[in-house]
Image 1 (spheres, helix red, strand yellow):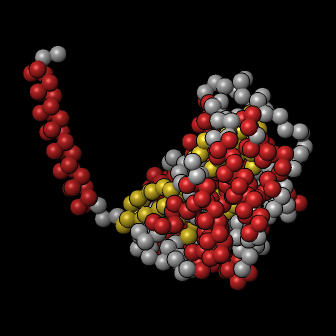
Image 2 (image 1 turned 120 degrees about the horizontal axis):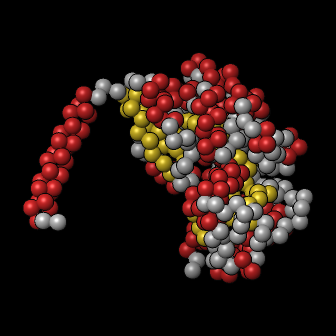
Image 3 (image 1 turned 60 degrees about the horizontal axis):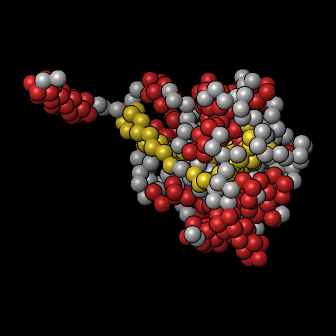
Amino acid sequence: MSKRFHLSRRISSLALTAVMAASVVFSTACDSRKELVVYNWGEYIAEDTITKFEKAYPKYKVVYRTFEDNESMYPTLSNSYDVIIPSEYMVARLIREDRIQELDWAKLPNVTKYMDPMFRSVKYSQDSEISDIMLEYAIPYLYCTVGLVYDANRVEIPEGTTDPKVIWGVLFDEQYKNQIGMYKSMRESIGVALNYCGYSINTLNDAELEEAKQVLLDQKSKISPSLGVDNLKDKMASGELAASVAWSGDHVVILDRIEELGKSDDIDMQYILPTGSNWSVDMMCIPTNAKNVDGAHDFINYMYDPDIALANCEYVGYSTPNTAARDLLDPEISGNLSYYPDAATFATLEVYYSSSEYEEKYTEIWNTVGASS
């Protein structure tokens, strides 16, 4: 290739860059749409939802940002977001701290029509005053349970067991060194250790918390788990890991990726839910410092359109609180008690509670585990 061609291509590239920059400035100056900033978990929305929303509401331009877990989201809330989607225990904290504002249900007709009535009676917090007003501040987006995903070709778990000592024991078994995954998420990891030890995932008992901390420290030194969130799905699908803690929705995603990789004959990926584990509700909220409150209500209401709710739960793999969307799901999914627990199963599970005492004690454990070598 001649130097002249290199030079002419470089000049053309510079010219094109200048034109594009000018176009961006021009389009920005001429774009009269009002900005709507949405802050959500990674890989937690169908790929075309934002495009469809902007088409349905052409007056808004969505700026979409993501976080990895509740604890990494929390320190960034001094920034201005219009819609955030934390889990219920973080929502309880944000209500206590006056970090989110009350919703105008008159602007949420889809939510009124399609939200499963079950969510009106959930005990979201140990503080009954907070639990009773939760839906005045937050709308369920998707929900899940926390269990174990494992390759049944490599890990043997007795059929029908729900014993947390047996199920979570895989994650602390030295025969699976370098082959297991743990969420880099405080409440999930400590919750697994507490459930494994036979304690409530909401305990404040110092001796029980100390035992759970030691379990996690021993795991880190002896098992060398892979840490993360979204990256663990790929590691499970590729066969790099034999087992991992997982939200129920991740199991669906992992199965899809195994099929895409052509490994369905090699990997038998199962999901099992222990008694006493967590179920979690991620909820749509409007921060007190939001700049586009009307747009935030429009967005939340749009997410409850049955077709949009269906597309999001199918893409993400998590369970939908939208009754119309659930009716459209494959019965193999909607009838699976690990994804859509019945009342008896729900009765064995806990949501995470939140208070300044929880945050202080659990953060201290988490920092100690993170700092260990």
